[in-house]
Image 1 (cartoon, rainbow, N blue to C red):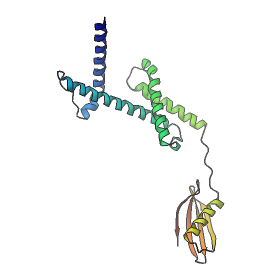
Image 2 (cartoon, helix red, strand yellow):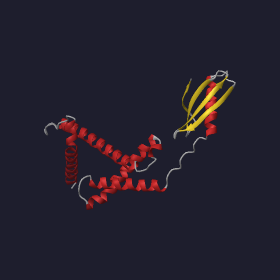
Image 3 (cartoon, one colour):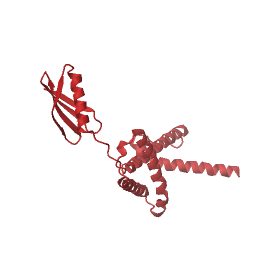
Image 4 (cartoon, rainbow, N blue to C red):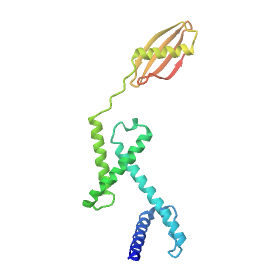
Length: 205
């Protein structure tokens, strides 16, 4: 009885190795890895180990790729930290592959169930992100932009006694403030980020 169980397990292991070998054969051939003769046991074991690692790497890459595609359904996904994005991508990819299992019983075509589940999960995330949009960050007021520009001019020209504002205008992403330093009559153009109030660039004439 034990011998029959051992033979059964050995047959299952050989069947699994054969399946992995056939699945990964296009990649191993591309990498120049050829299956050794059957009578060379050591090289055969080494070959199947390499094939197993290649198959695992391909599976992980497929999970990450599918998960990241799903994650792009969330409109503000780029605002998340990179580490969080990677973890979410792997979790979503694993979810897509898990849920595609039941679908494969109705659509027995390789990869199609996973593609369909990826599209469905992407659509769910997009619908949720549309229903609950992230609030836009508060913009910097012109008075704050002028104060930042004046502070910069004072740092560049400490001898300045008076800093006059010639003009200030917004161009969508930043405030542009034009200033005149007295008594040097030196003119400055300072650009302030409209979201965080930081100086993005400046020049003087």
